[in-house]
Image (cartoon, rainbow, N blue to C red):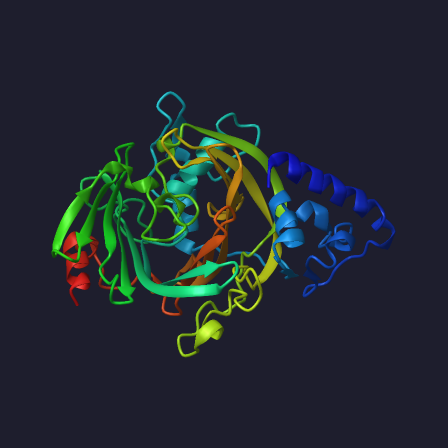
Amino acid sequence: MTIMQNKLWLSLLASSMLFSAAQAAELEPGAVINAGNLETRMNDTFEGHKISDLLTERQAYLIANEGLSITLKASTPIQLGDDYVAATEQYSAQASYNPDTRMMEGWVAGMPFPNVTAEDPHAAEKLIWNHHVAQPTKNFQDYSQFAYLFIDDEDGLERTQEWVLQRYYMKGRLGEDATEQGDGDILWKQLLYATYPNDIRGLGLHTIRYDSPKLDDSWAYIKSVRRTRRLSGGTWMDPIGGTDQLNDDIEIFNAHPTWYPEYKLVDKRTILVVANSQSTPWQPDASGNAAFPIVDLDTAPYWNPADQWEPREVWVIEAIAPPEHPYSKKVMYMDTQFPRFYMADVYDRRGEFWKWMNYNLRTIDTEDGDRGIVSNAGFTIDYQRRHATIFVLAPNARLNTEGVDADSISLRTLQREAVR
């Protein structure tokens, strides 16, 4: 759909809303918004907000035209980890943003900029830095099993793959005497590799993200020759295997802040998101579509989330991509309480809408008794290709797993796992 067609559709929807204003009502948790009732629901309210205000332009379009159905949930406060909050309180006053270098300075741990205001001329940049260094996942993100679902809008679920994602933070460590490990050059180390089916087992990457504008160091294990290959620094913009995701799309935004030339703060508003996912993402003992109840695999186009949505206040940030990037921009929606993105509207180099990303978050207990936030599922839907790749978390996801150190996240580990 072109920008002009989208504006025309929204104009027609707004006109139809005028006729239903007299029937406006306050909706209760459990109420459903779908294509059949969208026009009448737009003037209704939920927790004091008009539905028309709670829906982004993209959500409204997807409900009307792409089968998205939203079930309302009462908003629930999110409790961040005690160590995360303590580090923010202890160290945030030391952090500053240098507009000349576009770098953050003085950060130790926690959120460097917890009190950003819309009036700050560098608000967008500070929010992106929050996201880059202060994910509320503790020190070790251990997704030792997740699934990629590959979905076609006509045939439904095509195939599934099983992968591992492990990210170990070298800096900004929480709940420890030392907030930093190593020589201070590395922000985090990551393993991302496939475990199923056997024909792709071992496919994956070992990545080192530096605490500087320096491009990542990445290595791939080539299973056919039992060798590793060092990759160019541009892998952060490359697709992950045969998915609809780029490396840059992990958790919606996965780039060093300086790799994007510009950020704009577009808005601060309240929208409907999945902040406390209520769906079981993956039931390994089930078969077929029933194994992944967090996705509506039974109803065309077979890729819509099946969860509950609640109002959350978000920052709307536009990230302008570099010229060599496949995208022209991402418009992203970040929680104002903590730096995680819920959604993104992605545009191609012509400025046309291309992909919609939606992440369903939930809070879990960490292995050391604190709290952290994980993604129950992540939807990357390519509306030009009419295809989707959906990340679905297994029940055994952990944060701050005991017995893991920096040496555990290495090329040697990738090689070992590939030949098991």
